[in-house]
Length: 515
Image (cartoon, rainbow, N blue to C red; front, side, top):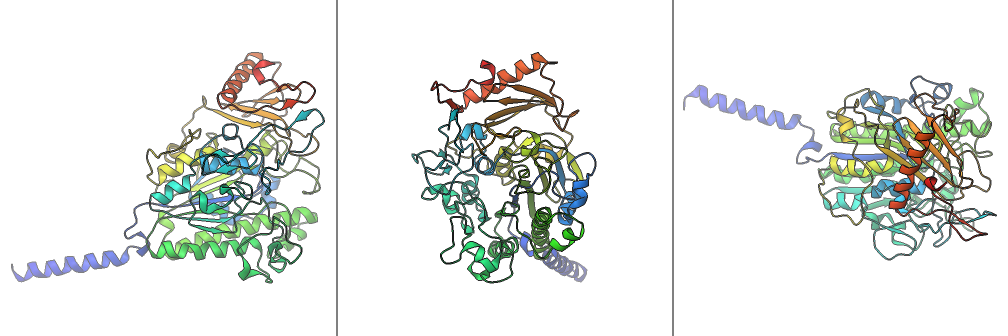
């Protein structure tokens, strides 16, 4: 070999060494993407500065969420994303891939075991629903036995981390502990569905003689400090991510904030600007909770950038139901907080079920794109497994969700034949409200049927023309009402969904096609 050839070989070696050192360390030896689900509690479709409608609204102008804006500009916005009317059914659907009518956890689970959260009703007795929530093991009374996807990710080599609100099951059952659902690390997740306090100076509720089931666990380091709960959870999440990043191990982070659930408490870092805008005290505090949540999203994205992991990390943002619209928990006139959507949390009208959703996946999802196809929370299960390369997993449940991975590749795809179903045979609040207590609904294409289980009334709306569900078309399109009633009833019966029972007769209320 001549001298020029040897020099060439050395040059090649040097170039290879330089190339290796130019590659982010986090990407060496890791082929699977990191996955973050950034789940917010009770955040409405309009509760941010990102417009999910065709045009920005006055509510969008109220809020300051620059990191959501950044995520939307770098990824995909879903304008027709849906959850269930209240929290635990959504969280169970996310982990199991099952519709709420199928898994039977149709209302929020009480921290206390075998304690129904349904309010009493004069005429109807409570349905026999899975009030103890999700269970990863069989034969636990009043639970749905299912395989949670974090178990599958853990088996596939992922480091699995839960931070924040869990609320999958009641105390004393296996599903109440995130470790039993496949999470190797659990920070602050337990059976309760909201914090006793957001304030570090209150020990997040862990005060001697004053702690309730809602006192947030695991954050003793921040007791007595000014650390707001949202900030403390973010700091702990970033600590938990250090080890898998150091080990070049793919991670799944379920970043499930307690914000923006009640109690609506001021995050002092942000609240003054909203007072200065002239908002009433409740709405100013609520807006500060929203902005604190957005800062958490930004802090996590910034940390990923600093660690060189951003390019191999998928972030999915969603809320577990529509925004709260009841007084006195919110300011202003009741059921106006989610306009132009009708009603709010607890309702099968759009204000209770349509939620903000964003997906960022560098190199896979085109920046600043919009998907108009409707999707449902149970779709996360098959999508996440497909993202992680988990194929043909062994499950004890059948899956209702549909992967939205094709949409991430081509947001123009449309499927108007798919049906989305909501079923709420429970009494959430003492007094019935718009779409609240004993309602079912189905969406197929742009048509939506709303069924009042108590009185049998059926309403029909065309959502592309009437997003506010103000114009009931049931009298004008009786054939469409009949077709959707049959479709809804057929699916509910296949899932063996429960209907409320009339106290005076002992008979269940009829399904939509029986009236």
